[in-house]
Image (cartoon, rainbow, N blue to C red; front, side, top):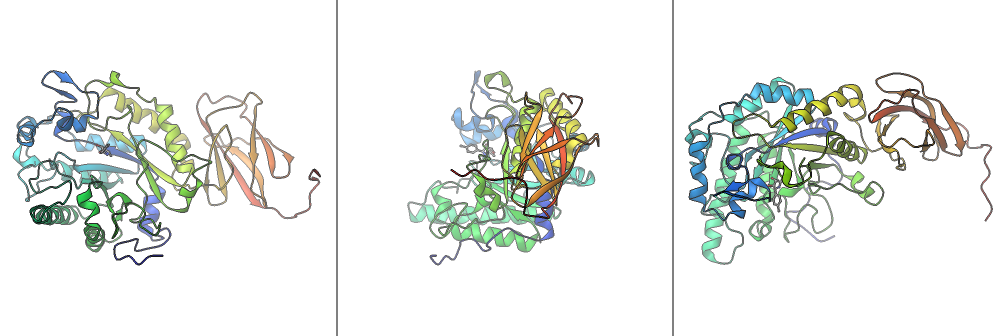
Length: 449
Ligand SMILES: Cc1ccc([C@@H]2N[C@@H](C)[C@@H](O)[C@H]2O)cc1
């Protein structure tokens, strides 16, 4: 291994209670809310089909013109308690909120910039109201923070001169101040999820990313930090130059998931995926017909897929400029919540099973219990299960029904699990109780080939 000053400061998964809670939460929601919600993807009469929160970039709007949107920031239908109730009903255990996205507009009254909610007709501390409302519902709050800040004159994409160096040094101090402000104003924050850290300017300042991780962990004991913040001595990001994960969990699975067969390496570390419901809209876009919009079942499958590989899943919501949610997102939350109420025990506190994936769906595991989450019932009416060597199935029951399900041993470490008598008409869950195999001898003979 090569010596590093700013590489991973820990090998292996964190094992403290705060990280266990992060892991057990499993299902989160993203809130992308900022000035970009006002134009909603349209500028000067032209609708752009790129990500709505990047409209300033697509339409090449100068920052001072873009920030004039603050005069229109007045979300009269914003109700933090209603947002928190919707999150509880969806069954999310945490919410990640964009405190400041690339545009530089702050949802909290930062004293380090004029681009905040204070200087809008609305005035109120939206972030503070959301932190309280979510926490009151027993929901953890995570802060999304974009290091790249299009509104700040000292931001630099690269460091090519002494002037760049001096400006960027001022920018890093400004960023430190905002992060300290967030950590001290909202001490119940459980996580910082950094974005906007891919530019050369950050890669050349790996030391600063290590300093931010340490500063926040000193200010908020137990807080978790995503790998995307981190660059090492050589500008290597997420995994340091020795291949060790930096931060507390990998945060590279944005709008994509690891393959359940080819990418099993991810089960060795903690990771969290995040996803959009349309193809690529994080912020509010007025026209969702411009790309495919995932159905609740397609969102659910991604949630289960992530948990089956020992990861978390964060489903994105882009609130409207008036502070309410679009009907499609309310329906999604309601639909996922209905499923979680019945079957959520296969998600919360669950992890990778170590069992070989089958076509009918995904496994998750909690202790000695293995859950079968069935998305694709087979014409054979038998769900094939292959247990690891030394493990046998004692019992199978339906979750949310408690009915026994017949299991037939078909070969060594192979079983047919019957489908429930009545087709649930939706993805359903069977809980397998397992135990270590008592005897190694059995009636099966391997072929001689
Ligand atoms: C190329 C690109 C850069 C940044 C993003 C941001 N990361 C997501 C989590 C959103 O915040 C999106 O704006 C997406 C694509």
